[in-house]
Length: 319
Image (cartoon, rainbow, N blue to C red; front, side, top):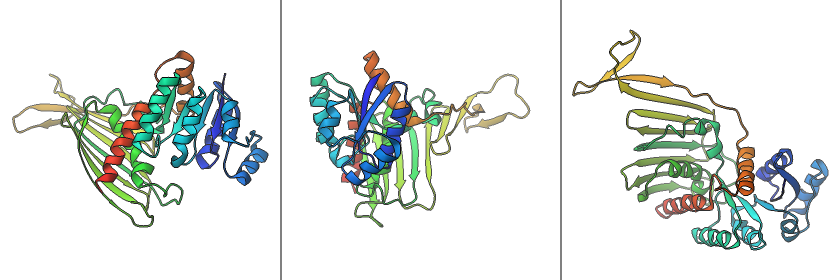
């Protein structure tokens, strides 16, 4: 079993601690939290060992799980990697693209593994259809959340939209050509609502909308491609695939048929893939353990995390 330690014991850090403790692939050694009062409370309540310094924790483990505020991601990761430790690092990978690139270089130099916590890659609604998404040419993403002061230290693009940016980059096999965006600050010092349009070199267009001051929560993406439409509801964990195929010789009387201006007829088929229940955070942590143990490529690499941050920064720069 790999020895793992968690840096940061806030809301998400506590979830990581709980799941690392449950995992059959890790041995939870302990955690570090800068807030000593919070650290003592968690140690007393859950029995996890609290370390006095980041260095002491890093020295005691094989894998460092970084769940600290984004501003400190790079410094924490740099120390861990320099000591030959594998790193799991929450999104966004770092504060700046330059930090992310330096971190990638360090990981390669020290021959360790790194994975970024883009958890929606492990959402069962997405994994159920990701192999069906093939050369999408138009994508629509909506990610709306009710206001929560946690996370407002960064623009909504880095807080929420980056999830969808990573998903889109994982399915569109083309370079970004143009980025158009607008953002509005309503409550926070940074934009709370943002809209972006990304054009890819292969002609695909992706529209993103993110808000953290919505009256309701929504996390939906729609992918349009040749003869198919795929809908993914990340919140409700539901997927739907609508396919259009040539009309067969014998048509069911209840079949839905469409005919275009040229007279070509297509039959519409509706599919609702089976969604396997899972814990996405546990899955991402355990697939990282598999990548370390089997010396394979992590599901979400540091390169992936850097690319998502790069596009997010381009969006922010276009405000």
